[in-house]
Image 1 (cartoon, rainbow, N blue to C red):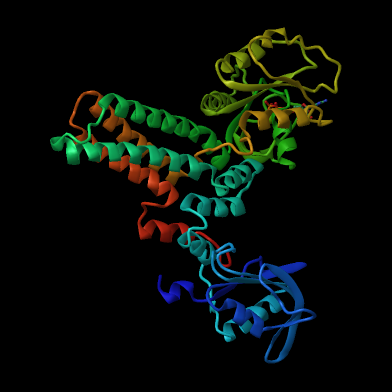
Image 2 (cartoon, rainbow, N blue to C red; image 1 turned 90 degrees about the vertical axis):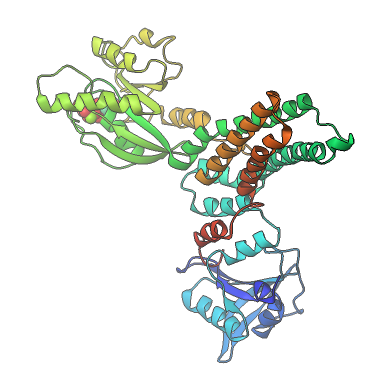
Length: 451
Ligand SMILES: Nc1nc2c(ncn2[C@@H]2O[C@H](COP(=O)(O)OP(=O)(O)OP(=O)(O)O)[C@@H](O)[C@H]2O)c(=O)[nH]1
Ligand SMILES: [Mg+2]
């Protein structure tokens, strides 16, 4: 690698706002010497893999009392020599420390340059690097958890194992192609077919996680349905923590669909509040009711609201009909009022029924728990969250499938080999073994400076 790839870089790594602590980071050859030019220890001199208290200074004098930590290559985030100044978190202090380091010979780092160096030095693969930005930008606990699992290499290990098994199969085919005339090696089509089938099943399992991955990435499309006046809009407002939808005691209040993204049980729910389901002569309300049905059909999750202070009615049957074969949580709302609802029609039809009150908040913890258990990934669960990864995995699966069918049908193995190599390359795109400079550029340009 050329010297410029290891040239010392510096950046402010924390947000630029008044804060207790702010960090200025350095990485690259000679960065310890640069750091020490701007640092005067209070006691013992600094040593690597240690934190040391002292003062950061520039030509005009002391800038701040700081903690300097030095890391020796390769035992650092980037795999290079690194230094970090933990300063007081004011803009002036951080900019002055950065300026002093640049004056001493460092260059201002570009977006994602530290992580990019970690990638180039083999500290992280591409999927792990991407997970770091996902962790920083995660908007829900589910997204953060999935990102952490990916940053810890769970997805990478699965892809590497699959890729490894395909490389082995490829080697068998190559041995057959190269030496079959001499009778040295024989490819066993049955064994090869089995190996490819196992890899294909592994990829299918991985691709099956896309749906859950999408929920983590984009949130759960959720429709609130129910007959008029049961408290649908009150539920939306409760979950949103704001008066987003109009609530009145008049049935038929909501006509247009009201949407709001809320965080429930660690997941982002894309909530849609709809018009209460009933027959009506009002033309505007009728359009609203029609929209409610369409929204319900398209949603991933239905929150079906029933009024527990009223007897079960034909309109509730109508709501229940929309719940057939769907992911549903039934809320028996207004449980703060005397109970008049006989909810036996829900029995055996909806697996999750929660007594609820939008007034007292009763049932909310249970709703959160239920949504978490439906969609929250387990701590080490591997999910295909990123579109880039899902797309590459789908291509790998397609090519692998073609290769396996060809082998099983007795096509000469060297013909199947082309597809096999396509599959190997596609898997390598996820972890970064086979990926173009453009793709790498694109990924790291999404990072912030200092990461
Ligand atoms: N006591 C009690 N009243 C509630 C509760 N939830 C909602 N309400 C009241 O029920 C009435 C209807 O509430 P909304 O939230 O407007 O009901 P909706 O289902 O959106 O009604 P439409 O938009 O007409 O379909 C209002 O007067 C609310 O204050 C609850 O948990 N307990
Ligand atoms: Mg309403």
